[in-house]
Each structure stands twice: as structure tokens, then as C-alpha cells.
Image (cartoon, rainbow, N blue to C red; front, top):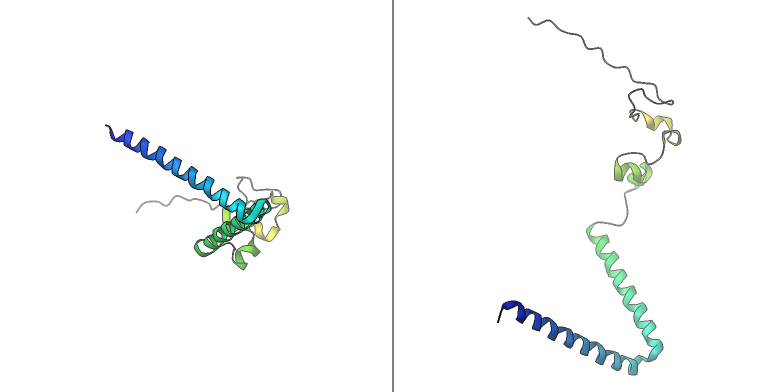
Length: 121
């Protein structure tokens, strides 16, 4: 017989076993905790799973930004650019921000250096 037949039979057997365990477990839990106990178990399961997920994120990546990043604004620290139009950004922070070649109405166009040809010697 091909290998995929054995894998298929193994998957079906595993599904039957898991289904039987779920049914037997539910019957036992119904007798132990009653119908209202399911809500408590569901809440506890979701709470524990969420707590472990956020604990893992906190330990690996971190949930908070530094005070400097928060003061500068997350649009700058996370994306490297402002998240708002120019008219809402304080003027001291707009130095060098104009992307249009003609500048903007709030920022004067910076002087462009004059290119001069230097004769070869």
C-alpha cells in the first residue's frame, strides 16, 4: 500500500480518538461543574491564554515604547514620518520636512548650492 494510505488512516484514527476524548471529557465535566460551570471554565481558559500571550510578547518584543519615542510621537519613531498634514505640525519640527521641490507655504525653500565648473589642471 502507498504511504499516503497509511497517513490517511492515521489521520482518521487520530480524529476518532480526539473526538472520543472530547465527548468523554465533556460528559465528565458536565457532571462535575454543571452547565453554569462551563462559563467559568471558558472565562478561565481565555484569561490564562491571553495572559500567557501578552506575557510572551512583553518578554520577547515589548509592549511599551520608550519615553523618548512617546514624546516624539509614534508616527515618527515607528514610521519615520509624520502622520498628519503639515499645517498640524509645529513649525520648529518642520525643518527639512518639505518633500515638494518648491517647499510649502509654511517653510521657505532652502537655498540650493550653486554648482560651478572647476577647470581641470
